[in-house]
Length: 156
Image (cartoon, rainbow, N blue to C red; front, side, top):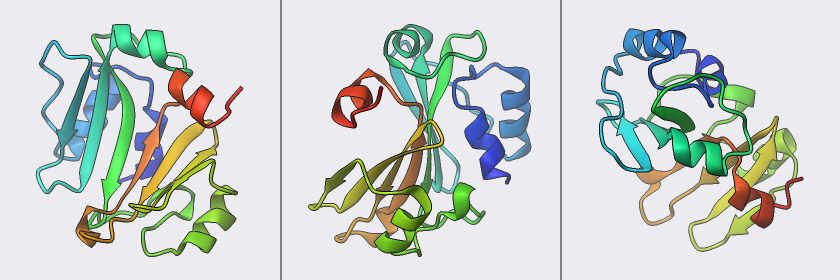
């Protein structure tokens, strides 16, 4: 899977033809169905999680402009530890914190309890979670920045 291509779809609707074709080609056939503000969809093996927001929520909260029309907009992509394909920017959960900082710059926010580090890089929010209690729950997420990130991460 071309993960960099998948990240480029952030801001597109779930029914955008190119996104729909990309997801279907990679075995992701389910699309958002509820009336909720946010819906997560995991791949069959659970290593990829797509987060869609309702168009209303995305338009109200996202700092990334919507790229296509539809009821649900792709707002986040999370790769879990066992994900088998290379990640964008050379990221990997096998890299230690210093190596990730070298790739993305200093973290904008840290949470020692998990631990996790949040970065702003290439116009996206990137969250690296390393779960000490359950290492298989470690993940790297790529997110469209929103109004809350503007405040907590100091985005302009």
